[in-house]
Structure formats: structure tokens, C-alpha cells
Image (cartoon, rainbow, N blue to C red; front, side):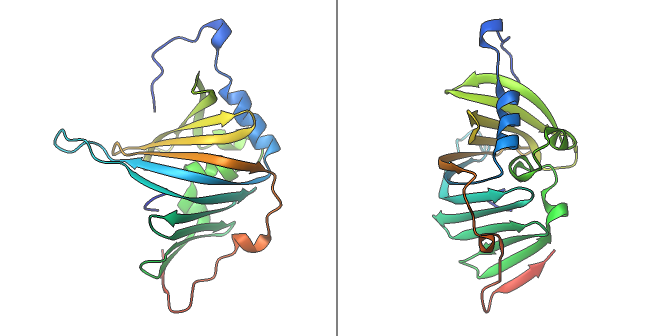
Length: 210
């Protein structure tokens, strides 16, 4: 998943300013059965030979419905669609007219998508992630999620929440690449047509099954 798809807290949390991230994450999982939003994603690669690399910015729309269904529609700068229908994960690259099809259970695992579409039980997340409060910052409550699987690509995910709404996913992989997704116009428990979570390869598209 080429676009889509840690921080160590060094300051102590004073009693009057303790983080509330875990409480907010639990409320989000319990309350948010579905949702849709706009997003902007900024990907920053690690510096090369001491030189900074210019971040790559993309944007589009996002929706999800628990359990296990979500859709990302990238519109700028390139069109790309990622759909999880509960069984299969589809990735469509419009420029290449190419579809990649993978078994969803094998493809997701300890990924940020699991944080969004898992069941409402926080314990289900704890099977794949070590979860901990992080200090409040930028007006948001934060949770640090560290995958338990040692062989995955992710190093960590910081989840930023505004009340019971998802605001930011700050993702770092083991290669030092950082991807920050910021969500706006979040509609909680939106009524979403089932058709939005179905994907049919366009006529003439190459379909790769993995």
C-alpha cells in the first residue's frame, strides 16, 4: 500500500495535565460505528546524505464502517482508491489502470486501518498493539500505539483525537518514513451506502492477486 499505508515521551506528566488519550480512544471506538471525512496526507522520507527531502502531500476523502470496512479515495495529486470490504483489500491505481487484490485479514494486521475499523472492544486492539497515553498537544488527546508484531513495517502510530472524533494519524515506519493524515469535516455515524464499500475492477484493468 504505497501511500497508505514512536515517539518516546521524555517529559513527565504533571497530575493536573495528565493525558486523556486512552479515554478518548475508547469513546471513539464505542461511539463511532461509522464515519466519513476529508483528509490530507503528508509523507516525509528520512533525510538522504544529510539533505532534507521535500514532503509529498496528497488529499482525498475517507469513510469507514465497523467492523472491517473502509475506503480511501485519493484525488490529488494522483487518483488512487483503497477499499476494504470485510474480506478483500482492493488497491486501484487509476494512472496504471491496475488493481491489486489481497486477502484483507492478511493485509491489515497491525496497521493504522485496524485502529479505525476494529470492533468497539478496545481489548481487540490490544491483541495487536501496545497502547499508552501520550501527552496532550495541539488541542488534542493522544495515544501511542506500538505494534506487537516485530516483523511488520510499522514502528508506531500516534492517534490524535478531538473529543470522540479522530483528528490525526501520525505514522512512522521502521525505515524512518513518517506519514501524517489529518482529518477534517468529520461526520460521525454517517449513513453510508453499502455500495461504497464494494469494489469492481474497471473494464480493461490489470488485476494482480497477492
